[in-house]
Amino acid sequence: MSQVDAAKRPQTTIGGLLASKEIAIACGSGGVGKTTTAAALAAMAAVHHGGKVLVLTVDPARRLANALGLEGFGNVETRIEPDAFKSAGVRPRGELWAAMLDTKQSWDDLVRRHAPDRQTAQRILSNPLYQNISGKFVQSHDYIAMERLYEIHLEGNFDLIVVDTPPTRNAIDFIEAPQRMAEFFSSRLLRLLIAPYRSRMVNLATRPFYQVADRVLGSQFLEDIAEFFILFQTMYSGFVERARAVERVLHDSRTTFVVVSTLEAAPVREAEFFIRVLSSKRFHLGGLVLNKVLPHYLLDEGAERRASRLYDDAPEFAATEGFADALGADRQQLARVLYEVGENFRNFNIVARREAAQRKELAVRPDVVATAPEFDADIHDLPGLLRLGERIWT
Figure 1 (tube, rainbow, N blue to C red):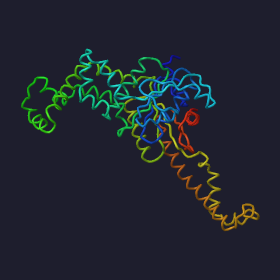
Figure 2 (figure 1 turned 90 degrees about the vertical axis):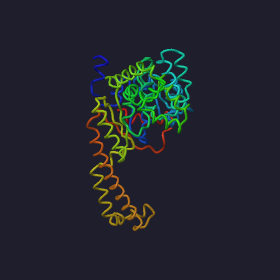
Figure 3 (figure 1 turned 120 degrees about the vertical axis):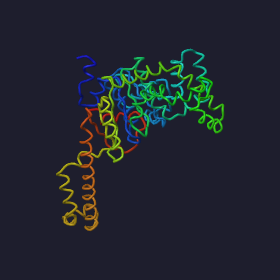
Figure 4 (figure 1 turned 180 degrees about the vertical axis):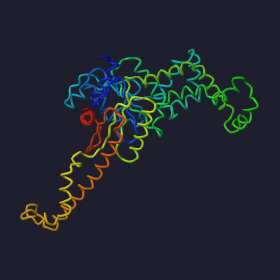
């Protein structure tokens, strides 16, 4: 079976899913453990599958660096030292690398690549408006993340790239970013912005806008805007071609999406929405990872019946000969403890049943569903990532 055929075959585990992919994109709402999960998947792939595995994050909170026990890293891929695995008691078959998106640097590289000549590139890079938005324009994260992913994949230095997507208010922003960029370059708004300065004449339609804008913003600001977009249009064909190439990579059979969520109400709604969007746009939805899930034993019907008996008959159990004495308690105190234990188990049973129902509904479309419990402490190092990875890998 070819690699492409293997990539199309549905898998039953996260490990099996990643074995046949070259790109895995972890996505979901903020605060659900997406960054940690992406790093855990990459670490497990390096341990079990071998080859070179890269985890690429665009999360400005730098949580990935913390989770990998690094002080920080940037646009350039950095290898996690083998000693880090050795300290965790693991001998990986491959290599784990990490990189964090530097939006400003990535935009600069993109301009140098697509500008028609060095002089034009330099004029764009030194334009005040470009300098301002390339480092601060939040939405540019979406496009530049996909652009950087495409570039790294094209270079072919890694066998698997796991992408931790940026936090977005709309979960589909980043997968639509290449298309939006292509549409922007041919938009009517862009033509209106640059037309007066390209022709050096303000026409009747735009004159009122520019007269008001000039008084409010100043002539220099408007000239900077116009120069920026005129120069940017010289890169139109390169950007559009590149955006379409990025879209093809996202739809390739060797690319998969892994939705990460908890089973709290808001993240579940976000996950449901994102799963629908991925399916409707025909992206491969390979996995669903649910974090902080209650343990399965809470669904045990026999245990729930015994908890109910403990709740209903706490005084009777507390009166059992020698039971209270063995615990150094009086019977009334012991009865209250048994009552609380029974009630708490039943309450957790209700929540666990609700989680099981939510999981069943979410599991209809992804190939693989994996769950992880809530850990006692935050994950901030490689052993912690591997501990999480073991829970979701098989």
